[in-house]
Length: 396
Ligand SMILES: Cc1cc2nc3c(=O)[nH]c(=O)nc-3n(C[C@H](O)[C@H](O)[C@H](O)COP(=O)(O)OP(=O)(O)OC[C@H]3O[C@@H](n4cnc5c(N)ncnc54)[C@H](O)[C@@H]3O)c2cc1C
Image (cartoon, rainbow, N blue to C red; front, top):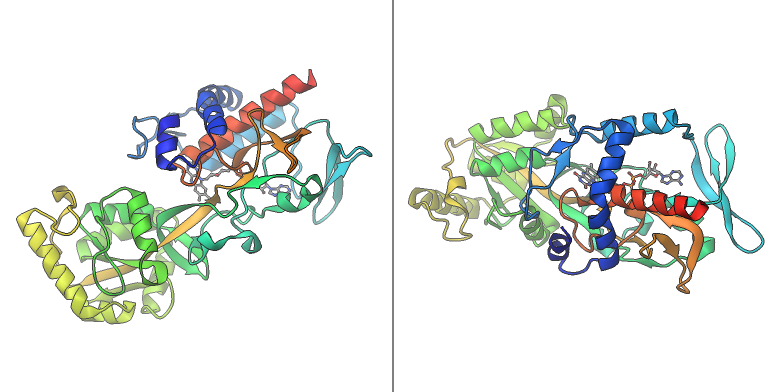
């Protein structure tokens, strides 16, 4: 697994944290499964970035199940969860040692004293001020809770950070509000499996549409306005539509997108070739040539431009076309605070903060510049497990 992480991130990972992650994830999953009664099984989708089939998922394929069961088990064991409690400050004694946190909610202010603290406050993707150059032109689809608050409330500790400005970028997004994306992965993958192609504003194909997501993502980033368009015939659109509705889109919102006629994002248009090109702002003549060439590749069973696997070359079966924009998107930030092998956070002077550990997305480095699918959760679960064990050892 460590070798796969290294390959995917082009050796930009922090080897110490990668080792910690890959050597502890097995035990961590066993622990959390027993603790909260989770029944992980083999994931339906095994992505090609992993050299062996190792991805797992819960029967519901849902993080809601994880959060619900783990929080219930935690409370049952005597743990206390404070909701409506946003940490605003840390408490320190005269020597600067952290002694707790102060949280504020809509109805109360709360001080929690602690001998040990594990910081697991997630990423900072929702914090526009913290976003760097790499995220410009990309839409965010993560939780609004990725506020980056910790970078403010831990300022008195003068902590080291690394790779702030690195993001896990995926293809397959549509911009549903300015700067905000929804993902269309299931639908887009199906459409390309059925032969649909990606074109740019100039009307030319941009990539082997059936290649791995990272290749698709990188190709979209290079296009005018960082946008590509998925061109589908009616039969493909119907499958695409069903999968959108199954995964987080309503029929009403899709109708509204079409009613906007390409004047507003997300671009969803249909009609004959000239109509879709005009509405979506694609060069019609080049698009026609692109489709003619593609038809030739289908007939001869050989994609002369990108060498796409012939099993994914399919003719367009109708003149009626459906065109949907495709933008890159991100939810996850890959940079964060710096931690050593025991997961204690490090100050800028290189000293460990004696009783503050980090876990999850708030600690940068384990996956480097590009995490494989599943690896962000792998990092969160394994680092949480290790940090908690280290706290217990320290308190004994
Ligand atoms: C839509 C989506 C799909 C994803 N899919 C995958 C996937 O398939 N596989 C994968 O590996 N990863 C996936 N990820 C990434 C992965 O879910 C995250 O990296 C991971 O959940 C991070 O866990 P965490 O515990 O570090 O942070 P989070 O889960 O973000 O938890 C941080 C918590 O800290 C709280 N918090 C923040 N600031 C404060 C404060 N000041 N006071 C109190 N609380 C605070 C937040 O409210 C939040 O509850 C996905 C992410 C998204 C958004």
